[in-house]
Length: 240
Image (cartoon, rainbow, N blue to C red; front, side, top):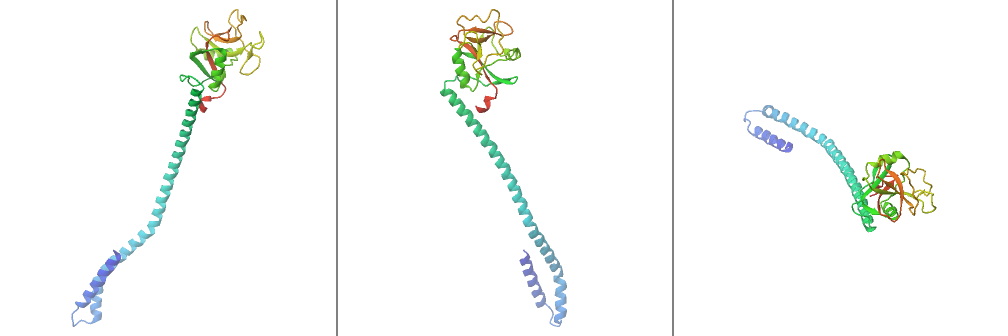
């Protein structure tokens, strides 16, 4: 546009000079033409200033756009990383489920729930022998519950069915009358027996039964099928 304006001004000056009267001297004619085209020259100067201002603003505008693009790319990168973490978490859960199905763990098994400082899973549908319960808890990433106080029994009692028995980790299979925790391999330090228990009539595995309140411990035949309580000191749900 600037070059076009210069061209028209030049043509205008030539036209102006050619139209001068014959009797006029060249200086007088040139002065007249200059007065005529002076406004055009002023406008031309304005156009030049605008061009200069535009050229000086272009680089900063480009840098601003580049910076904005970098910011958007950074945000997109973080979002992609979050999605990747979620995908990896889902893959772990899928692998865990496939592993449990391969080992025969029932599909109705739920998740461990935190009660106090421990995580418990209370089985309310499937009944197993004591040894079968040990195996199922292991397959879930835990072990048969090792109850250490009446406080722990009270905390979990609300999750138990009435008039039912639940295998826990205590047994005297290794030596009659010596009750040990199969989870720790040590002698059981907390035993809250029901009245007239343990009977020790070929009953070597311990259950927590809910025939009375609060739930009490009872020895029973290890081959009987009972519900069971699994425990974990860490949240094994994170690895599912």
